[in-house]
Length: 88
Image (cartoon, rainbow, N blue to C red; front, side, top):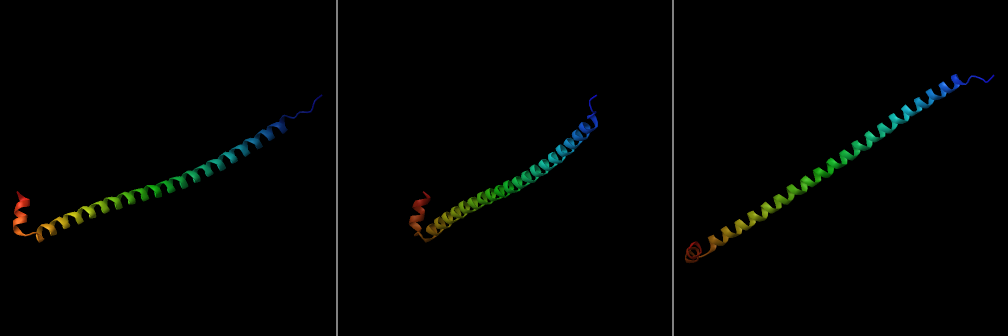
């Protein structure tokens, strides 16, 4: 007659299932943490890209304003006949 190992097998299966759930939970926690860090880093990169684009637009706007001021000064400093010739 062979010994009955069903109780030992059942206990082993339960232990394996418990370890599997713990590992799965740990892996999910790790993945969620990594994903959150990735998203945080990505948001920071997006914020930097947005700030860079804003700075570029402001720089272009300042350059345009500088050109307008230069043209206004040039027109104001020009003698009256030269201004009349430019307007024609």
